Image (cartoon, rainbow, N blue to C red; front, side, top):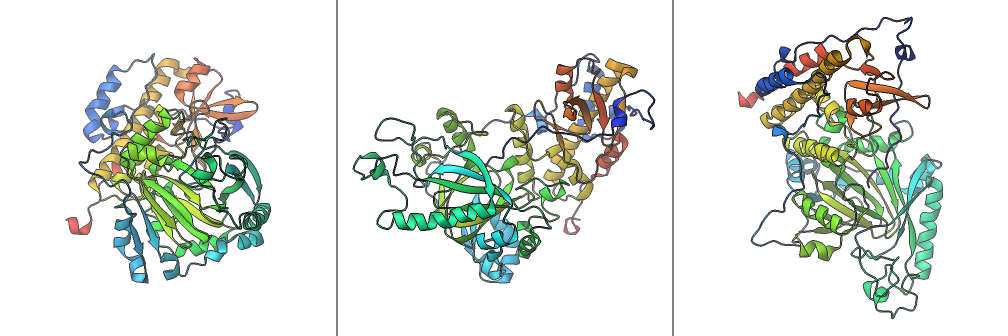
Length: 546
């Protein structure tokens, strides 16, 4: 599910940096150097021209991190002479440890939009009982969880219950309201709902069908026969002290499926992004829905059904997300921020193939880069999920493309791609030439923007503004502009609001204070260090490539 908008980004800074009067520590103004003082490969001439012609009175424009400055747009669907609109979902039945640990398994997973790995929990002897409702209550009964109140419907239906006309019509907008409770209280609800549904529906279908909602022949009123259910979502299992036994169990998985591994892009962010590089759990009753979405920044995802009930999945190849984006607009919901449940007939009419399958207890679903998906619980069950980022050109390009698309739509990128790219350059030796070139380009664009910003500040404000050093601390989250939600890398424009110090990007800081009189400018990385890191990030040739 789409994460809620986070609270205002607050930065803790040394308060002694807020005034120029009688500083008790020495402040150091950052040294400006010519942009061409570091190697830019193919971009060196371009940067020199920009540096030469940039106006000292105009702040630098935001740079694009896509090669050739391409503006991202929703893709046109592929044109095929014939297409199977209901393709078989790729699935593997794993029976031996060799199969699970084989390098071919990762290749299989990243070669399909979505796939199911059956038998993997049995082969690895995963103790899924550790994630059962009973175990959760015994471990952390007072742990807070988010609850979504929804209407229980069949998985291929999404009726507009606000309409006053019969028959009811399917719509895309997926309604739910948010509240909070504890694991123990939701566990009581989960158990009660089981007894209640079994009792009430002993002689009736568990989920209402289209007929008894639309033809007026049902014994009950068409709206009253639809249950209101509660879905326990986004249960945070990131605390390694509280959930050490559960998290340790997941280290049995192959490296490419683990929450943390050297080959996982998200392991190099340096702090926790809830539900992405940490585990989240979902507590469900029949009908609980995770609406349609792509993962944050088009990362891959892992989902394991703990059971005891099943889940039904729907998946669409990323090539068709542009079509779904158009259908969302047509049906009055925002693709990025809205909550929507696709009408299957609309997808089929638009020639969009849909994978549809059942995830049984112990099944692991691998959601590949950019796959659009939505999920509904068939029975009472729990699920655990997290994201992974394979170190491939396809994944990295999709992530930075969505980063740029999010910027165009004023939508916050949960994955800080610029910060991550610098960490990748620092931590990993890349042997894929395409991936190396892309990362190098992003680094050069980042350096370009930093130096153009420094040049603008020096020539426009001179000695009236001092850029102060405050290096990043361990596990410090990346900062985002409180106005536009852009990632702010290295140069932070800090202002005190309601006794809290908040960060803005340069453009937004100038909108609120043209002379930056009440703004403190901090830098978190030494420029020479970034240049050295850029120069040292070279293509690493694998032994068999020499």
